[in-house]
Length: 107
Image 1 (cartoon, rainbow, N blue to C red):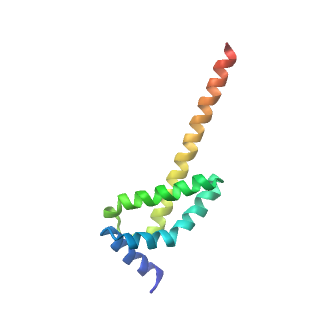
Image 2: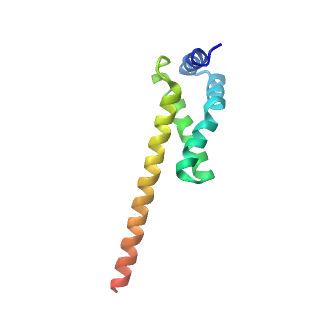
Image 3: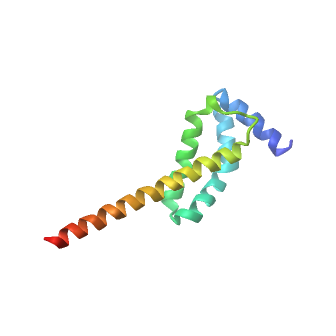
């Protein structure tokens, strides 16, 4: 069976709550999402966490999935947003630390 047709069938089954379809989609795309996030985050632990968060979100929102749209593209879009959140959080933390250092030097 062609992969796109298989993906549609798996997403339809996932939408109905089929855990085996979820596992199969994780098997198909989990490593790809990991590799994608690792290129940006350069952290095994953070990349693994993003993969877990992406698939957790998929499971929670499974009833809203549209099998006719690219599931792969949807996964990567979610992962991309998690990567952005990671860098925004890191930036805020750096700014906070810099401010603390600046304030402590004043005294």
